[in-house]
Length: 462
Image (cartoon, rainbow, N blue to C red; front, side):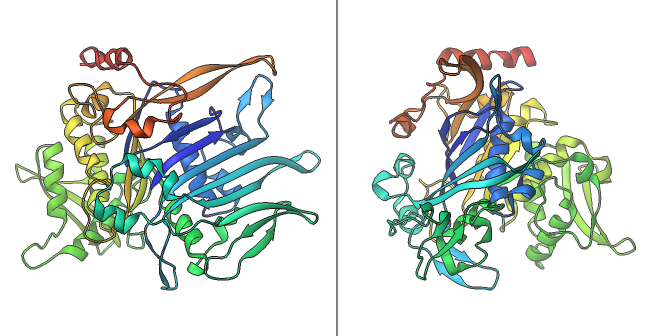
């Protein structure tokens, strides 16, 4: 679970630091930087899984465009830091299982543009570090009011020494992987083309491996209706892809795993029930393998008994179906970033949809009987209807965090320039007061007047 991010030098961000709750809405106009926030999260996740070149290749825009551009030139460094809560048990691909004694960690990475050869720029890892977050310093955990059972099962604070550091020596800079029950390691840092974290492939260094596994499950969900409509090849992955291209295969897999004599459709009955609450008229959902083509296909039956393939279903119905499929998949875990959930959904159904999405997340205040995969959701939107769904009558956030994204001007006398940057400001919540202490919101809070102005546009949109 991502609990905090700090961004400097990436796209429109300069000196940003913001904490998150399990359910977070980022609201703002177009070009305010909402998508850039998701891109920064995605970049951290990419760097935990692959080398720098590949991590940047999979981003929106060219690698050079990731570095902040101002009137005085382009930044040479991107600094990213995240604080996370990891699952207390980690399993590696070879079946080794380790129970962690520390689950709150901070990870930092700095990317730098260099010319290793004249005229040939390259992006390298300049610095990297990982530290345990101590119990006495864990403001995020305390502000969430964790239940006794959640605290016992998920919040562990046994480690005090660093997990990974960047060290200077007469021989040069090096990355040091510190002991984690075994002897540590050193690696040169003069021209690192990948993060150290991406190389931790098993539970030998259990805490770093758990950190990597957590970040691997941070996904930017960009559902493409055109791909959602298509049948899925029999060889498709059975975990939902970011664009939803394998939705039919995932539904077929869930059906096969959950079907019983009493419930031959298994969990698909629950999915269609939720779908009907949000988009009335659907009575049955099925997904089967078409033997001739060796493709999985989706079929929806309406209340009048007429079946339809996914090829003729509306964009909004398919997007909601994909989200509900993810919600009902017991293998789902980690952070999902989802843009504009209101697209293709009737305004009258947006509030129930947002409430249902809020049920996807792990709430630390709830009692838990055993450790479960941590689930988190972050959505962005410019819809006042989505905003209204997350505020109570006093315009306080309900079971989550609301952030306003906009741009502000920074005056720099030393550089003799003024720069525009993205800022994120929270809507103040009395129940989250402790989280907002100690400089949490350096850019201030969203005023009641600003919230009112956004909400007043609902009538204009209608």
